[in-house]
Structure formats: C-alpha cells, structure tokens
Image (cartoon, rainbow, N blue to C red):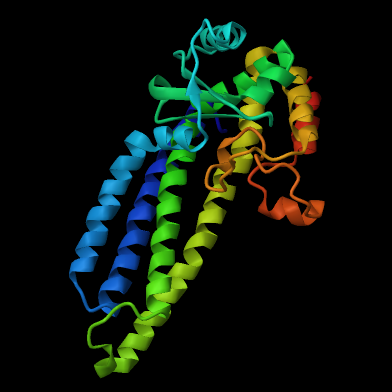
Length: 300
C-alpha cells in the first residue's frame, strides 16, 4: 500500500530517471549530429553539455522558473496575512518556512518550486491574494506546501529546464539537417548521409512529443495527491474546493505564460483555451477542476 514516504521515494527515483533520460536523449542527438556533420567532437560536446545541464537544472532551475514569471520576493511586513498563513501551515506540516514570492498578475494562480524542503519557494499571483478569502488562501497554500512535503517540486522544476533544452537541441538539429548546414563531404556517401538525416529528423520530431508526455505524466496524479494532502493539512477541504471554483471560473490566461512551466501551477495558467471538454482533457497538464472539486467535497 502506498504511503506518503513511498510516494516521496518514488518522486526522488523519478527525478533521477528523468535526469538519466535527459542524458541519454542528448547523447543520441549528439551521436546523430556527429555522424551527419562528420565531426566526432560534437558527441563529446553534447556529453559535456548534458552533464552540465543536469547539474545546472538541479541547483538553479527554481531561480529560472521564478524569473520567467517575474516573481518578486515578499517580506512579512509587505503581506502579513500571506506570511502568517504560510507560517502557520508550515508549523502544522512540520516543514521549514519557504521563501515567498508575488507575481504581479490579475489571474489567480500559484506554484511551488525548489530542490528540497530546505530550499523551497512558493509564488502566488496578486490576483489570487485579491480574490481569495482566508480559508481559500489556506487551501491553496496547503496544496503548494503538500507539493513540497511530497517532494514533487524538484521533479516538476527540473523537467522545465531539461525538457526545454532537449526540445531546443532537437529543433536546432532538425533545422540544420533540413537546410544543409553541415558542410563536409557528405556527397561521397549519400546512403549513410540519408540514413543519418532520417534518424536526426525522427529524434528531433519525437523530442517535443516526449516533452509533452512527460509533463502530463508528472502532473495529473500529483495534483490529486496534493489536493488530498492539502485538505488533510487544513482539515477543511471546502476551502480548497471553493478556491478552485474561483480560479477555474476566472477563465482568463495569465499575462506571462509558458507551456514549459504550465504543469507547476495549481491550475492551468492558460485559462479556457476554447477546446471541447473531451479534446482539451487529453492535452491538459491538470485534471479538470470540476473533478478535483468533486473529490474534495467528497472528502468533506
């Protein structure tokens, strides 16, 4: 039977798996590039890049995510109610106080990031603070603290950097292959060159698809778990259910959105994107809000 501790261990293992998969993916792209451009040095360059990016994403991915959304640090004096809510819930959950950030955006939303509970951060939008009652704000913060306690944050944050760079590398190789930027003497071996080109195109085409699948795989189940953990933390599931109703009812997208970070937010930062419900659900990084609300009210 799964427990909080087995789920935490699973998240750690999945983080290492993701970083290993990133290393392998970059090495495959490097191998294809070295064959196509007839330059063995490219493989070693890709290897060094992969190792560097794994280390960089572990230590700095949270700072990248916060800067992407213009998050500004918060002090107790600036937002006393927010600070008190986070502090009280941290004491209840037995977690260290995370750093707090505000995103100047009217759309209500929030996310947690960091590499572990000792180096965690919670960011909320100004719209969330304006829209939520205290018990609703407590529900949202408890949800984000649950991501920290469940060790979701490292996996969610690392995927932003690693998947993003795999997609960029794949796109670069695809463009280079199509537009013939390789140089060299490929005409002497058209057969091998054609095979290498096909491999490169396949890898480059599949990389963004795998990126989306990874985001979907790490998001939906974790949102349900964080909802449940947050409700247990506050002892008031209705607070988070009501907050999710307001967030989903807002409808509008955030001012600065990025598909690479969409899975990190408590709700989709894109708002209602105009797809039919069934079609949209296939590509959503979050479970439908009504399903989450139904589960929370069932807990009550």
